[in-house]
Image (cartoon, rainbow, N blue to C red; front, side, top):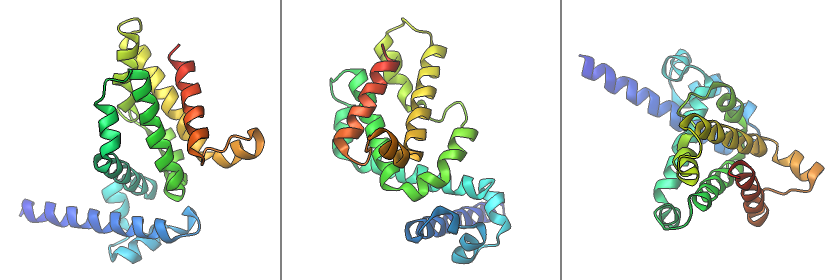
Length: 194
């Protein structure tokens, strides 16, 4: 019986994820993707959003994580860079470039989840950067100091995506252009890894 219940819960989670992703891709702004709209699209009881994901934002965050994971797994060029002999600092910049580019390309989802991520992240989230930071410092900084750098750098970049239109209008930094985005990231990585 427990096996059937788990399958039903997994099926419900998948229906909610698919509905939320579909609605996010077809909306004009994230606020249109309400819990009621997701429940209606999925054919699932509204209360199951909170039961399965804790909140609407938790559900949208799972959609974002799935998209990020899919891109990283299916991008052979990215994986080649991560496995290459370039410096840890360069790998860190490439990782953040890929993340920020995806977030900007899927801004509706990013906009809906970035505040949630910034305020609800656990100690593991955003730590993809940690191995590169630790390798760069080679013991000159403690693990805790490297975690703080990973947290600060990731948070700064998430906030920059959330406010990328303001950065463009007030600072003339257009993060939608790959060259500008790379330059912005490299400047920040240099600051944090000096």
